[in-house]
Image 1 (cartoon, protein in one colour):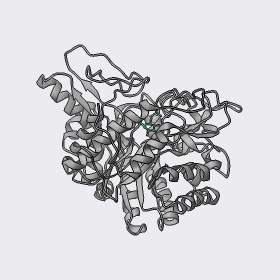
Image 2 (tube, rainbow, N blue to C red):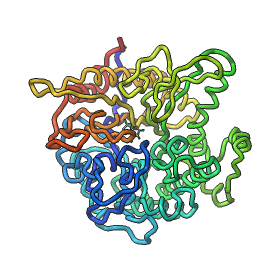
Image 3 (cartoon, rainbow, N blue to C red):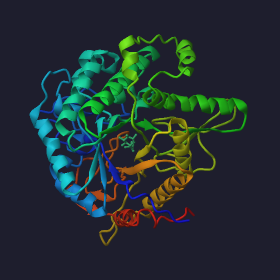
Image 4 (cartoon, helix red, strand yellow):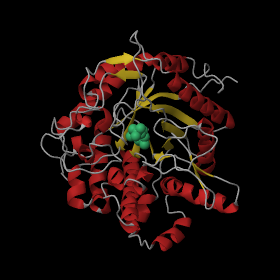
Length: 466
Ligand code: BG6
């Protein structure tokens, strides 16, 4: 079967400021939580000392090289580019009343460049980082005061860029804090459920306030949430496993439920009781939550299994502790590859929310080798992306409304979980290694031409998975 994706479907790639920009301490930027995580967002927290090496300090130097990179995206035919604004560039400490003009001016230039190439910006307000000062002096999102700071930041950027940035996301993978609270919320790892859920509640309220601000300040603006869409299957058809899988999936769907319906789902009442969590939710919070998102966005890389009784191996020890699925292969980093699962997630989310969906991350982290002719023949990446995009085509036929697809890391960037450069996702190779050595030169991979063809053919050249 061959598909022709809708004309308005947005095609592109996705990035995050701390994984591409570098320039971590210039033009008035404050330190962010990512700047003190040299081993990756999922690694141990380390105090930053003078002279410490953190590969993200330079990353791929997008801060200075953005015209070249955006031109390469345009050459591939991107109609959309997802980026995040580093909150600490705009409010270096996070609690100031006035923004940093140099930080604001930097993103003006990025948007100028995107406009020049006719690309729609999709902007994440907070992607795995926040001003470090807020984590150190306010206990991160555990503090209610952050709602005010975040809303102020959101209003500043909507006012500044709202005339030309129409697509926004609030918190990247908002459900990550259940696994890595420092990365998502500036709350120490190992914190008790009360602190975690209170912090996440503050983020949900802040997200809703940003949605309201966007609706007020950005004419024709659309704002979505962003969830880590790692669906869990029951390992067996034993009813206990089916129930366990339902409960596991509620761990992430809970966020979408609040953000798209405007109130806490009833199943959380029992959960909070069992965990001994008593949330501080006031009337103003409840009112704020009623401002709901316009679309649902999510990342999709892998799926897992759960069981209450059978033997099961754990495949991704580092991040999500996914149960092994005997029918699937894994990447070199233990992420289980499941293209059909993307069609399942798209259908599930559309059935549940009846809102447009946007796949804002998907891709294969792999080691690439430059061959004797200086080429990078990344057929494994082409096959991964083809098979996933084919399932998007199927989901469109199923009647699911999909706004677009931005694959993760269209240009090689620093891995969030491991801070490796060698875990590459790009269509564009960047000459830099895990120790920071290399010329930073950019090079088109084989997948560059493949994606260009897929975009140009509006998906018609996708091949049925073999
Ligand atoms: C998502 C994050 O979880 O996965 C990105 O939003 C991240 O920031 C991506 O980079 C891939 O993960 P990793 O660890 O391979 O970089």
